[in-house]
Length: 279
Image 1 (tube, rainbow, N blue to C red):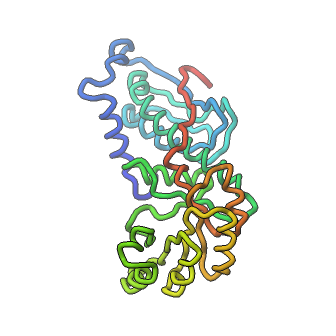
Image 2: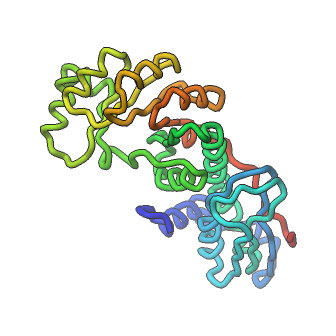
Image 3: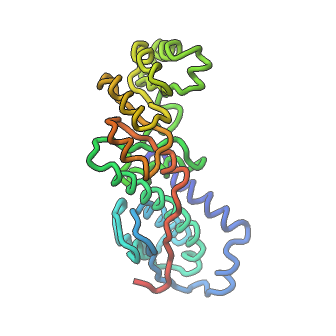
């Protein structure tokens, strides 16, 4: 369903956290064992949808023969009040899965919705929006999936699939030249990206063999000067101080990429509810 992510394990662990040893005591007390339920998950706001397959997996985990019908596609942008998914099956099971399904769907849709807003803000500039590693532990693959559903592009998944020399690496290695030279000598097979904080670090980084530059916490005027200095020799990425108010000006400096931590770090959950007998 999502490359590199154990959906079954995630669903099982999430349900176990909610059900504990006694299960859903409310549903068991109030609803007959053979009771049936038909419900629809709907968005209260305009959103970009992500996570419907995960929501379905929660319902099917507790009622393997339930009927789940997606009413929109992943990545669709929908208006407030749109029905997203219809589910029918054993009432106790579906109500026991409801909160876990909604929590996941709300979180991922929130990320996708915020990402879509950032993508729209830089439309036509040629810049590409990237996410970062600023994610809830254990949910990185899901968060990055949601970014893709919102139209963004994934940066490295973890420390294993991208070589990024940051300021602390530079300090520990003894400078930009030393850090980049050592990274090139390691022959990892990965492109060498280097974070630079000042204009005077650009030429040493490029001379040492940097394949890409991360221009960190630079104002738009400074970014424009940095892009001019690089002069297309390598791709450039702007990071730090990026929000919906600032991103357009950052994109218009000519940077290749813009990375935004808040996409996955602080996206508000979407307002999605499950209503009995709706739709």
